[in-house]
Length: 324
Image 1 (cartoon, one colour):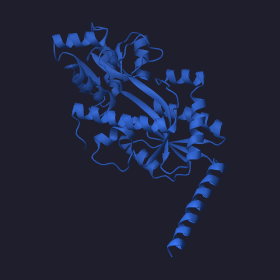
Image 2 (image 1 turned 90 degrees about the vertical axis):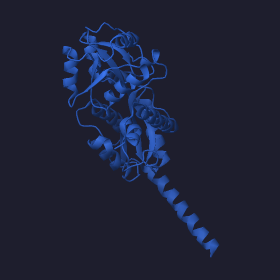
Image 3 (image 1 turned 180 degrees about the vertical axis):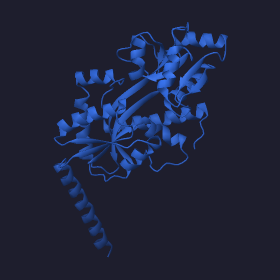
Image 4 (image 1 turned 60 degrees about the vertical axis):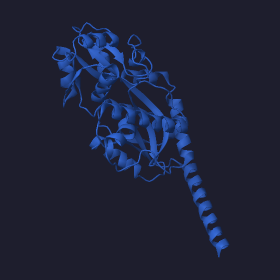
């Protein structure tokens, strides 16, 4: 009886492996959907559509972006996690969904460590600490000196305590001993306008918004949150040059539901590696406020996501955000 059951199990496993291999050999035979947690028309949406267009050409099948915004990225992430792992659903996964939400929610309808297989890095985005021209500081260290001399006199426009600029501002307060007053805005365009007009002295913005402000002199950049200076703005020092080890970035990776055949994962990774080497694409994405750090391997992408989840856990704990 035991040997019969064993043979049945072996046959079933073998058949499953053969089926998966055959599926991978014929993939893709129909259009692929790329789930995006961000709203249509946003910079990340444009990024996802550029990548989808390039993948469509490389794979010979249309890659269709499906926007499913809302609920702090939970709606899209849950949909991607529950999709059939056949290579026809990909997830344009943001850092907030995979690295931040596990620490700011008491419970999630998905497990970022178990529900996905990670395919490749796509792009990263840094945040600029910007000051009104009337602020005499030209660097982060000078800002710290001004704040230490007159604590609580500097106000920074942010997008709320649990969003990117709010968390970065709170972390800077902790790490640098700053006393910046965080002024939350329901609409960050209004916050940016208040910073330009001088109603608040500082703001924090991603590259797409910050770049034009820096270029026309409306605001000056004190520091950037990436570990390296951002291409096109090499004159702006990193926060880490003043506060060692501080890095705070947004990023996007390609993922798929757990169980997606490894042959498909490796195929997409290989295509992404070629796509992200195109100088024209790199230049175009730089104009949207993103920078390219290569596709990584699936294994390196998985390790990157894990390390970022750990880092964000430290940040959330340091600034005292309570999960809800």
